[in-house]
Length: 265
Image (tube, one colour):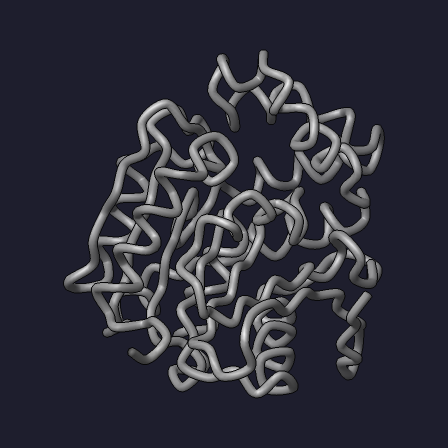
């Protein structure tokens, strides 16, 4: 289990692919972990060097006492990429991971060559909404919010299929303290102005059945970056790579090809 020892925490991560391959960083959402990208990896173009971190408070990473600041999550990603000597990466961020990716691109332009944003926005929810959710998790664990969350996150047909079980288990296994910590980070973050100042290739991907970040919100977020592209994956929810991995991989591969982010030759 690879661990990166950072000044104030330890991050669990996976690094796959050839050492000289173009870097691709996959940043998971609140309530997930690096395993959420497992089904996508075999569908990606060959030759990429793929980094998947567990954000603090999630998966195999340390769970510091909440709350966390968005700046801490971004510094974690920055320090991990520096330790692993990854530069000019294409960074894919889902939900919370999308906010981390946006802020990382603003802070360290040398680390990010292109952005793929899915199920995310420059501002997510209100402080009151997040405070209520944090209180629910503290009182009753992840089970206290799971029902309403799953209904808005996943398409009905997917929730009724056997393929849904690992995703249900992943959400419920999230440490409540880690969820509360990262939820606090989202609550205090507004990236509209910094995002509008970015100048780099970007792709926004939305699921047509997403009840948390509807397609119009994802599209508007991507449109803050001049020249960005938008892809809609029909029949998928908040995590389209879970429900339609083939369609998600196709959109991602097209983006990587379009910016020349692939192995030489």
